[in-house]
Length: 235
Image 1: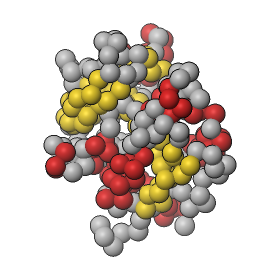
Image 2: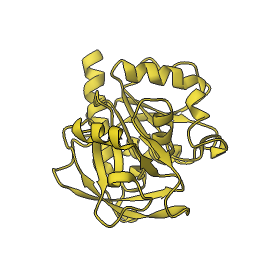
Image 3: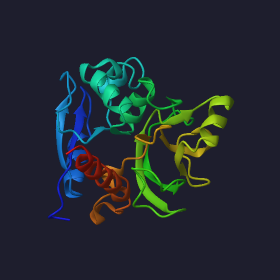
Image 4: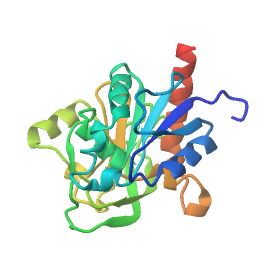
């Protein structure tokens, strides 16, 4: 892996992001050339192979989680990048931003417990044929922590049926472990094009054995693999 080319991955930093350094460190540990990018930039770096929107509390969540960050200058280029097939991952608050930007279906609402949840959760991998889950095996159970107050993914019956039919649900909370009341136990959703993915759990906090699990490396490592392939394809 040390001799493999390192794809450039931009980790966008918004006011209130607090997992950007963890995400950058984890991606670099897994073979990427990740660097943080301030939200005020107008353009992504020219060599960007993937973008990650990290967890945290962008703009303090003062209006609605992700609703203000969605209008940050860099997001115009992130949307362009995604619409052109670029790889974009949103973690927790990043997932919220992606739904607000219309890049992923559904919305994230306040947890059904009305409490902030911080705990390890068990996830079931629904799809392994994506750029974000290729290192997983069908039916894998992953242990990855969540830490959110508004992590309840919601869609009306029509949108949920559409998401189920199109295979847009890539991760679910294992039966009986849903920490936030997400409808259909949804923990992670992928776009119809397969290049945008959002999940509420934090894979960057599960890449080192000292943290109790390395299952997050399956998610982030899959992204690094796909970004490397994308970088080669455009080289």
